Image 1 (cartoon, one colour):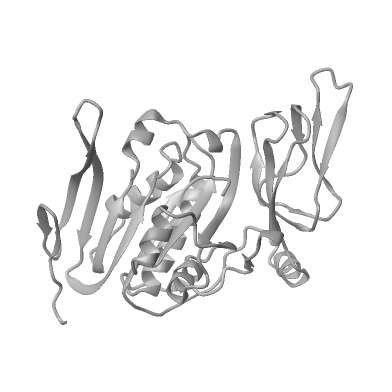
Image 2 (cartoon, rainbow, N blue to C red; image 1 turned 45 degrees about the horizontal axis):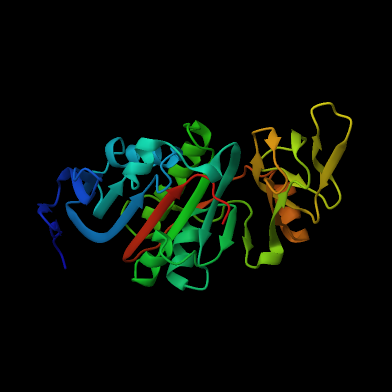
Length: 315
């Protein structure tokens, strides 16, 4: 195929070299009013694969909304080879309500969730160049799992906290998007070849949500993205009079992927998400000057891929 073809969907068509902003009807409210998802479709003048970006599957997680919006409407896509389908707000009712209980008061370092057993999904995940990949196929019915099982390799990117834009995370995620698009030949730039260090968390024994045994006020001693060593104190929980305190210790040496920011907990509430690091990864982190490293670029190519953006979820 030497010429780009139009992108068609139920009710419309976008020709090569054009961008269409569509409000696509997917459901109805209780009153019978349509629920419409905003979709930006960018079709390059040259043939290539199709990439799909979505955000706000949890409606209060907004960092990804800005990532997808900037890709669709601010990037220079004049050299695009193929098609970009961008859904900045996937869950419109949730976005309007701005409510999702599991993200409240927590923050998350940028990481990828992907089914590494699927080679095509692994390729997308590694091209995104996240330092942390949590392996798993996702729950039945989730977009990531259903899309991947239908033949579109899909990853979820988790980052930050709800109800806000965090510019440093957004900028880092944009680097990852460009790297994935370069890997599959949609843009003529180089992908990130190696992010400086990487850990792939493959089993439940390699990660844990540490939870409060007591209710009270939490004093967090460590930050999102920090390395903690086995036995170190991550936080202290005290009652309002500080007559009784309880320390939460790291059960193994690892990386704080998610950390509580709301200082009030009930017994059983999660206070942090810890993933295990081996000695080799620890050495790489130290060599690269900490957990914020991002390194080299290179090239490659192929077919259809997708990235779903979320904030923080206790899966």
